[in-house]
Length: 225
Image (cartoon, rainbow, N blue to C red; front, side, top):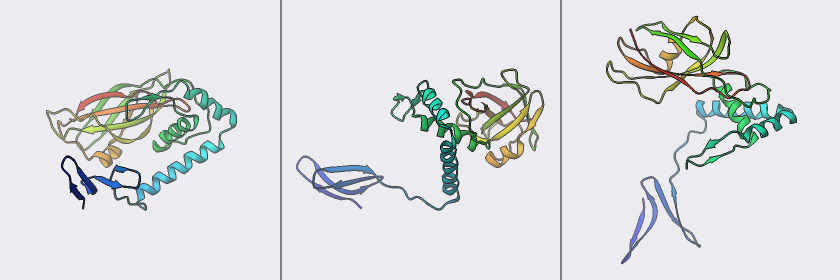
């Protein structure tokens, strides 16, 4: 509950109004967002802490020479904060983000130095999703490779006419062979639920390579048969 003291021109407010807290100290008044209830011992929180600890340990195991290679790589990497400002990450931030990306996708972070380059996106040879399965992806790896590790995200429209949303959800990480169908139905259904006949959907595929930055996504739309 907030306390409000009305004046001739302004009002003095102390307490909580919606999601904002008004407070008054000896020096000045402050305004801040109200804290949100956090379940510290949830399974998701425990998994996040475990992933962070693995990434931090991985950083500690990197040789000094490899850590300095991350410092060099960071100077050519640009990140954007929530205010839209671009900046260079630190070597630690860059290494942690890269390790977390691989770990979250089911791969080992590895003790490799960064390469000053980005993986080339894969191509989708064909995409055939049928109600009840299978959901077959046929991928052509890049850079002359016969195999690839990919990160798959997807979105459903739950409609036969409306396009799928452009905020895909993580489905899983897969090892694919060039020109060979990969059925992603179990992981897709677990994340998004089963597709219906004639439902429109979209996929987003990122190419993953040891030490390289993850590729820009290959995005495609499809309709279930």
